[in-house]
Length: 460
Ligand SMILES: *Cc1c(COP(=O)(O)O)cnc(C)c1O
Ligand code: SF4
Image 1 (spheres, helix red, strand yellow):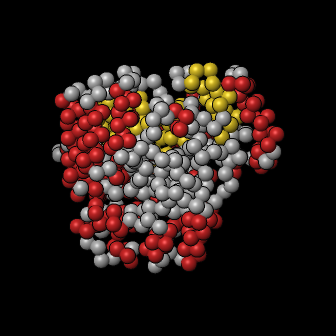
Image 2 (image 1 turned 30 degrees about the vertical axis):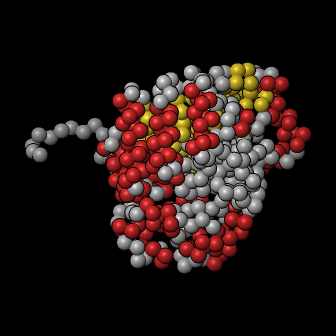
């Protein structure tokens, strides 16, 4: 470049920290974990090795991390698992990304490894299936809540188990606290869902989730994909998986799986139907050089990928953290689609945050990158109201942490409420939540202030 044609810059140079989103973890970052010290790149990238070495019990996990964590942390996690509603499963990739010098505050630890010491009491209004998915389920494994789209749940296993899972009522093996509701798990059982979808011409859009489609064998990806593509009125399909966030190497090394997905995407394209991948990154640290290569592979194959995050305290609930996540996703060809309010789920109150925090974060993120890479912040209204823009509440009692939503196209006339975590409220508000009678009063006052009749309130 010539230096004598000086260009006048209106903007000051961007400080290096603004490029942090491009700064992905490089090299063999797993080797600092004693259990993986001898693992070479080919082995670490092998999806079968990742599956085999995923820890599936608290004991296995504790064994793997014994040498990297303090005895206090170990005892804390041991006690945490004893009371947790979700089963345990963590991939070596995720374990290697945890900062073991400070595991208590680590964003990946927070998502997968419960600690007894950080537990908070559940919100007094919390239930197990807060989204009431079972009420909108005409056949096992299918949720038909919205007019033109449905959620198909063909399996109940995942490559990891997230502490905050909204489907802890069904996902993973039974735990000491929860006997899981059965979903349809075999091709024969799936047939009922296909028949139902075929009989509902309004259904244009099918989400295939679970569980997690990462755990579906390639032949079942093809079976489900083709069965849905064969239904004339189905126009759009999304395969949903947490996989790329916690085991991205499968995209690179499980060729048959990626080929199966590609074949459905390609067949969809020839039929004029959209088939995409939806994934679930929450922390910027989940995106490494391996992720970048995996997302590149999807991009090359023309597999469009969108992301749905959960807003989680201590993971991505600040302006800077969310901006970093959103920019990093865009950088690796993933479109940030949604950021969800954390559902009202048992045993994870310390991971939830307030509607006010979501609104503030959303305001900050909007404008920092392309509009199509800017996620919509939504609250899946407890009680089955469906997703609402977080800032579209009819009324928000900030002091007591009660947001009231309406869902005119989903459940006309009804009111739905989301509750902020009580520990985030003032001492006076916390005292009010201690009384059942005052709770009722506060909720009913909020619904009335929203201009909705009291009797229209749907509680989770
Ligand atoms: C989220 C969801 C969908 C898909 O909704 P979009 O807003 O289109 O992403 C469909 N069905 C159910 C039950 C859902 O929870
Ligand atoms: S991957 Fe999804 S379905 Fe599975 S445990 Fe995590 S949030 Fe739940």
